[in-house]
Each structure stands twice: as structure tokens, then as C-alpha cells.
Image 1: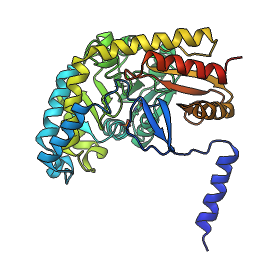
Image 2 (image 1 turned 60 degrees about the vertical axis):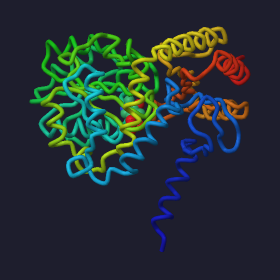
Image 3 (image 1 turned 120 degrees about the vertical axis):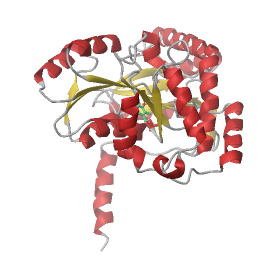
Image 4 (image 1 turned 90 degrees about the vertical axis):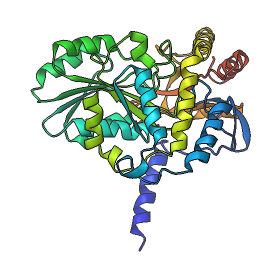
Length: 388
Ligand SMILES: *Cc1c(COP(=O)(O)O)cnc(C)c1O
């Protein structure tokens, strides 16, 4: 009897022994600078709400108005009867925002990445991915059944060599824009330049760059001034800096039509609630207009980094609001994050398999909702748990 549970318990026990067991915390507040976790107030340094929009009252009002107008659910997939004018409007706004001919909404970034790679690539093709790419990109590559190789992190020579060695009919180079666990930026200008000489298409997932980088929040591609020819496939998510939910792909007419025809994670799933699209439209306006949020982030990042340098913390090469502090001992990361929590500071404890073995880290995420005083208090807490 019950052999499934016995087998699963053994595997779960193994996970515990390796100190890799994951647990969820229970929030009784919304996402804000202070959150209530397991009944206790905590400074929130672990969300991807970089601009502080997840709790913005105007966006909540838009969501309510959307629900009044369209109800709670879309009722069907986009290709049946789920595609509402709210989705259509948001897609047009996102196309304009990204400077691409068209944009297509997906329900999540995970599904967008799976959907793009599987729609474009097949058995005779080659997918080349940065070693530190997000799991959803790697999973998309695997599911596509294309040959997949990972090139060394941000290493153009390795990428070029792997491109040269492949005779696949289609080649797709895939990279995060801002790397999610390290906070550093992909060398997109060099990657695009490499692809100008060698045949291959470039897909950039800028989940952590949109809203944060670029004059109007258009992400790394806007900050670097890269055109649609240079970056023909651009993915963004709406659940991070935008403070809502969902994702989009921006690109040419042919790309978007191809996704509508062939992308299974687009076709076989219920469309986002239209009210969420209305909320995202409201958020997009704020993202574009309120550049003070980006400016504040830059100042918080520099305040944090100079304080952390004085404490000799092991920072990484990141100018973005993702500020990892390397601990290297993958078990110690958990202990340290627990001590921070005891002092009222929530930070992500990141360990394998999310990052390579021995590179465990605290993933400190800054947000425009933080105050200077909060950063200083965090630094004090870090000093008390890591400082010598
Ligand atoms: C968060 C993230 C995703 C997934 O987006 P969701 O909308 O949360 O599914 C994809 N790519 C990267 C780089 C991410 O950080």
C-alpha cells in the first residue's frame, strides 16, 4: 500500500539532509516596504517590486474598474473568446513602449519563454543559452527538442565559437538582460554585433530590466539603444517592476503571428483576466512617467553598496537593484538569513540548484519604496550577522 508516499518521503528526507528543503513563509500583508510574515513585521528586501508599484492605489483602482467592466475571468483562451479589448489595448501600448511593431501577452513569463522557444525551434535547430539564464529559458530549450548548449556566462568568445561550430538550420541565442540571481547585465551590444556577422537570432528576457533601466523604463534594450533588428525577440514580465501579473513578447509582425499560430503555452491556456490587463495599462503609464522611481533606486543602490563595502561584505558586480551578498557556504546562507529575519529583515537565501554549488548568497532586492533609513538599518543588521 502507499508505496508512492513512502518513495516520496525518502526523496524528501534526502532533500532535507542536503539542506535544500524549501519552505514557504506566510504573508498576511500585501507587498510593501514592510510586510507581515508569519505574524511578525519584516523589512521587505526580497521582492521584485522594484518600483514599489505592487501596492499603488491607482493601479488597484484600475483593477477594480476592470473587474466592474469585465468581471473576474476571461472565460477562454485568446484564440477562442478570451481576447478582450483590454488585452488588445495593453498589447498596443506595450508595442509602442518597446518600440517594436507588435507585442503579445502571455499569462506568465515562464509560459512566454517556453512558448517562444518551442514555437521557433525544433529538432534540427540549435539553442545557445547563457550559463546563468533563468530556469524558464532552459526549460523552453529542453522542451523544443533542439540541440541546446550553454555558453560561459557573458562570454562572447565562447558564444562565437559555439555558433561557428554549429551547422543547424536555425540558431537562437538566448540571454537574460539583467541576470536574476547576480544582478549583472548581459553584454548585449557585443552579442548583437556577434550575431550580425554570424547567422543567428537573438532573444532577450529582460524580466528584471523593464521598469528599472532606460530613460522611460524600457529596460536594458532602451538603455543601450538597441533596435529591433539587433534584438528581434524581446520578453518582459509584468509581475516584477510593473507590480501586476503576466508577461509579453515584443517583436515583428511575423514573430507575433508565428507565436499566435505555434506557441502552445499561448494557445492552450486561459487568457489573463481582462481586469489584470487594465491594471497593467495603468501601471505602464506610471512606469513611463515617474522616472523619479528609477532615480531613487539608483541612489538607494549606491547607498547600499558604499555601506556594504565599508563592512567588507562580498558584493557582486551589480549596479541594479538586485544586490547579492555572497556567502559561499550554502548552509551558512540559510542560518544568516534566519538571523536577519529574527531582527526583522527578510532577504532571499539563494542556494543550489538555483545557483551553482558553493555560490550561495543573500539576494537583497532594493525598491523605490525603501527609505534611506531602511537601507541603513539593513546594513546594521548585516554587520551584526556577517561583519567580523
Ligand atoms: C521571474 C522571471 C521569469 C518568469 O516570469 P513570471 O511572470 O514570474 O513567470 C522569467 N525570466 C526571468 C529572467 C525571470 O526573472
